[in-house]
Image 1: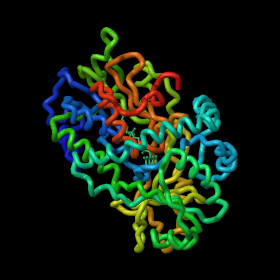
Image 2: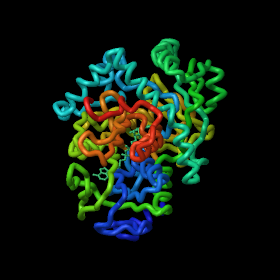
Image 3: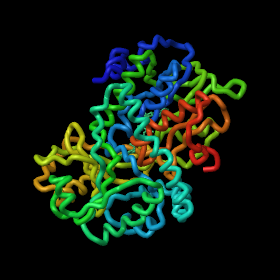
Image 4: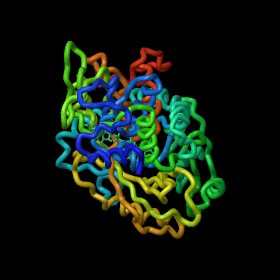
Length: 438
Ligand SMILES: Cc1cc2nc3c(=O)[nH]c(=O)nc-3n(C[C@H](O)[C@H](O)[C@H](O)COP(=O)(O)OP(=O)(O)OC[C@H]3O[C@@H](n4cnc5c(N)ncnc54)[C@H](O)[C@@H]3O)c2cc1C
């Protein structure tokens, strides 16, 4: 159990200021960060490094939602948005396949339609290019921001700098990666193309069925993302910050400034706020003047025993559309893009089918399910997160919508938010991450 979790438990999960920071009812928090996933926890730590008294507000234990169950990859050369020119052609076949990775809960379609239509518009080549440029600009800051926070919390050993692989069974499927390779080259990111022997040497735990691979040497694997965020929260508390285990419901506004966060049990007075509630940010963002097409893009994982010949790094099995990654508790298999209501019950059938499929790629795979999970990527139709000041209130900041790359971009987002709060030059053009006009 993390320090932060223990404090919550000791406090009885009622009205819980975990008392380390000495904050109490009605007392001013210099800055309140709403949401304790990788994004909010990173914002909180960077703000604390600047000397702010920070209170993290989250009804759940930090790092136990989307940031817990992802595919553990710090994708340090990711450049592709979800909407790419060819994607629409693939969608009907994927939707028809009951074992496939894409699913839409049809009852949800009316609410989803504006998001899907914008996604469709974003497949235009000039838009893909612009969104890729915006993603790449953030990605360039990912590793330095991670290095700062890992040192701060003493968790360097939780990240393995082993690169990442995309593997392809056929010449035709490898040829399909040309668009991505061209994009990486245009953005200035390096990669290696591996043949079947080289794939075998790098990942002897895979069956010898992969003819080609794309190797991204700068990427890294987090051994346990949930534990990492827990360590961020522990460090915040150990350094005098506070965590409030409550749900933010709204804001008090006086003279065009946010003066308080209304929670399930009262109001906490604040000087500034950062909204980083991941897929739950939409309603609160609207109250801060930012109306966005933020949708929950659900994904799943299953934990399996690690095979005798272990999988060593994040591997995207492109033909079968799932990912394998080593986690400190075993082998994690992730897959799935499912559009559904945020609180719709999970449907584990597809991810369980993927486990059967994985047996073809990993010899002697023990398919015993250790645990199963679903979580919601906070997705915007352009795959570009919002990192901005509220369009309406100058003392409110927005940090959400990191879609498939939140684990990767959490720390760099925290660094930029701290720069914005301090009035420092963030050293990149922030216009693509604005909330207005999206
Ligand atoms: C299957 C899958 C695989 C993925 N793989 C990767 C990967 O390999 N690499 C990568 O970079 N990204 C990956 N992602 C994406 C990544 O996990 C997310 O983008 C990221 O975790 C989002 O972090 P977050 O902090 O914004 O949200 P979260 O981690 O969901 O945190 C949001 C927090 O806000 C809290 N909250 C909600 N409402 C309120 C409220 N009203 N008041 C206060 N708090 C509130 C929640 O309790 C939660 O703790 C993956 C996602 C999935 C689903």
